[in-house]
Length: 607
Image 1: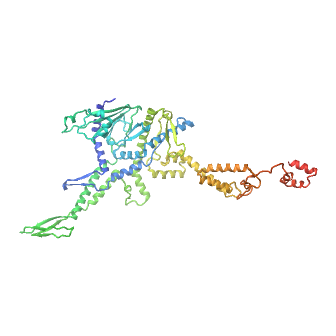
Image 2: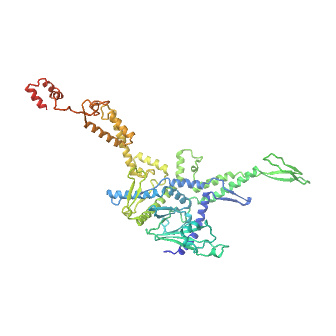
């Protein structure tokens, strides 16, 4: 456990060691924000830059390509072939996806990609959210992050990390008034005065401290009173794991952003453009000098104003204009500087919706863009794969440490019914081992979809693998169930249409009208409507109606096709003549001689 004084000392040492890197980061930030002012001391004026900001163009385009696809976690089952183990592995994957969904990870990845390219790192801190009862991701500013150095440059999880941010005096008094009032050196304070907050994180604890106002001249003794740093909170870390993950770009030995090399070129180009505009302005409104004639004393009687057409009057001298030429190689120098910026920062003209004059085919344009962007996107996504793997492990540790035995639930996006899934962290996360992979590292979302279609067409990939790789499909199993259901529904509709088109088929007009009414008016699914129509037809065919009733008539249907109800037999004992007539054929002939012994025997045999 470190005391607050030791934490402050550690913070000051790391800030001093990272001074040059942080200075370069701030220059990149100012350039991206458009806060750069080009000093023109020889002309006694300052000009704001008015040239294309290629840095922000390349930063936005490349970072959006990096974050256009999201990786997918994969948890292998602990027991291959065991259905329960496979189902538990799928549940672990869905839980992680629910974390990402609730934390809006797709938006956070876009911000992290910009930090990664511009500042060379993309730190994030995970902490338990006791309001939502789940781990939460907090993206931190690399300019305010001081991670512990490590001998392994590929280690993304530092042993400890210090984050800084500022809060107003009003916030400090509202939340920690008793701890800071009369103890912390406040200085000349107002409600909007900013104070620096230090947040120290390691595998044992989280310490939050506030730094007092710096000593300055003119402060009264009461304003100088107080300690330099006050500890606000010290929270135990139940996970036993560092809660900060700091992925960095792969460089030689020092952190270096992708666009650090374009700073000097941009300043030179902006300064040259500003000087050119000044020269053009002087060419439009040239400097005028009053030159005296020999032996005369020149005098200006009336000043000239070209905008209003007023003529100038001079006595005893001549007016001469001094024309300023920007220089014949100015445009060439500007174009050369722009090209150097594009080469240094990997910012092709296609990012701005243009194309090089030597590119005349779409295929060649794709090759140039791919050689410029794809490998950088691939490397960034490879780093984020490892970072998200470590972050998922920390998130699982938070779940098990704080809500391990508590029954929890989440909603699966896109699930129509039964969308709520329940789980218990200690039971579900038997292990935190898993993989995090981008579906096609180095490709943006457009290239990914085209590649999936080509692999499916050539038979190199299964549809299940394609669904898992498609960023638009959040639940591949649900998508498979939907595709199967749609296929069976299409087959059922085709069967109904085929049978309904046959006059002798089972779907008579009344049954077809009833089926249509169920699906259109009552909005009943087609499979349920067919079952209800089947039950109605069976009940009708099993029931009886009095002879001659309308229900016994086929109506619009063909006779004998099941559209009519059976006719009930007449009341009383059956008529022998009627039975014989129903027997038909020989029975009818025998009935002509009912009194003979043969007729009686024949009738008895038939009965």
